[in-house]
Length: 100
Image (tube, rainbow, N blue to C red; front, side, top):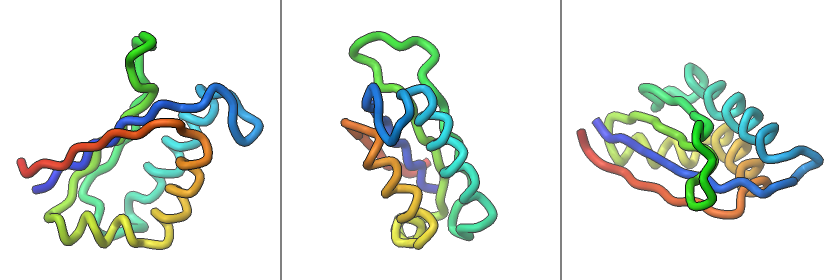
């Protein structure tokens, strides 16, 4: 199993919403992909509960069978649509992928 973890730092304001509102929207958009994008084994988005200056604002934790299925997820039109919104509302991203 491959774990895919992404961290985002959100813009203070973007798309007419503040960072907290955009975190909720991103959570809804990405978690809604479960069941629609067959490669996803599990997916969740969590807002940071302790917003220190150096911390990121939210994390995506997702599981896939392999690197191949992760790439298929990333290329899926529904993911690309959600990712386009994420790019508009975030200012930094970090990620790690590992086999479990």
